[in-house]
Image (cartoon, rainbow, N blue to C red; front, side, top):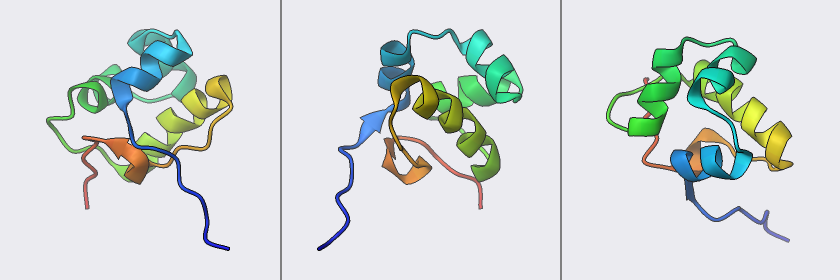
Amino acid sequence: MPKMTQQKVTFKELLDRAVISQNELSREARVDINTVRKMARGEEKVRRLKALAVLRVLNERLRTTYIPEEIEGLKLAE
């Protein structure tokens, strides 16, 4: 049976659903606030490892299992 994938969602939607500020998220994920801001804007690339750290916090709060590729508009650095 093929693996079920979650519906794509934007980073801002996850932030809203998790009821967490960008500042609090950056602290909990132990990444610079600018990384979280870049992810929210979707205009600049972020490193995969940092995106994973941020998503780990959101996934824990939301009890989800999103990966960077499932976040609409998220740009990852090579």
